[in-house]
Structure formats: C-alpha cells, structure tokens
Amino acid sequence: MTTLRRTISVGIVCELLLALAAISPSLAQTSPEPKFATSEEAEGFRGKSFLLVGDDTAAVVRGLDWSKDRSITLPFWLGTGPATPSALVPKEGKYYVISEAYIRRSLGANEWLIRAGSSLQKPDAVLVTEKTHYKTTGVILPTIVQFIGTRTMTRSDGSSLEVPVLHEVSLPMTWTKGTTPTLYAHYSIKAGYPNK
Image: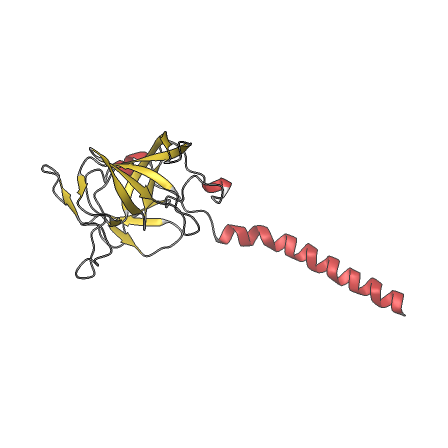
C-alpha cells in the first residue's frame, strides 16, 4: 500500500512538472522584452527635453509636444559593474536614460564625475555635456545619454580604474509636478539650445 501511494505521488509530481513545462513557454510570451528605440529615434531628442512616463523597468520617453499614445522606450543605465545582469550589460554606441544619477564633482570643461547605475550599486561614470551646465552637485534629472566607451582614471591611492563615459544627448527631463525639488542639481542651458 505504501509503495502504491509513493508511486502515485511520484506520478502526480511528474504530471505537474510536465504541465508546467508545457505552460511556461506561453507564460514567457505574455511578457516580452520591451522593443527599444532605434538610434535615429533616440537622436530625435538631441538637444531637447522630454517627459518620462511611469515605468520602472524601462524608460518610456515622450516628446513635450507628443500625444499621450506616442512614445519611445529606452533602457535605463544600470552601469557596468559585476551586479549588472549579463543581458543588460551596456553596449558602446547605445542610448540609455540615466535616472537618479548624482553629480559628485566637476572634472573641468564640460565633464562631470557622476554616480549612476542600478539601485543596487551606483559606480562612478563620466558625463560629458555640451548643452547643459550644472551649477551645483545633486541628483541629475533623467537624461538621455550615449555610452561611448571607458576611460582610465586614477584613484587618490594611485590605483587606476576604468569608468564608463556617457555623452549627453537630450536636455534634462522636464519636471511637471510644480517646483523642482531642491535635491536636484541646478543647471543652465547653453545659448542656442531652446528647451523644446
């Protein structure tokens, strides 16, 4: 009797596993990876501000004069550190949205040392700006950037470190909820780049 029960239990478990295996491909199909914007679509935001529409897995970006049913999707910048999942490791030349990045200090000219990445880790990166001049440190409003490679930097102890270099594409996101909170870095837009 015990052997019969054990055999029946094993049979039921096997049937459940087979049923789950048959269902799992259809479950995977119900939540496809987002289709990210092309380079041309991302370049359409060069020198312009944008709206960020609520999504915490990918950046849903809308032009300031776009209708509510029009948007593009870009990946968030998660950094190049070991905690970044292999499928999400950034590729040179691709476009990303930095969100909740923090300016540590100016590197001179149009370059800023920032902390940017996933919520688990925010390693250093260099942000190169052409249009935006940051007047203070603080959190950067979400901005579309292009990852152009890495640069070797020297730490205070003399050791070297490879850091990603991000080029500003868009102006910072337009804040639509009243006064911009004080935690965000103050900036100005250089002449010749209207905020539209």
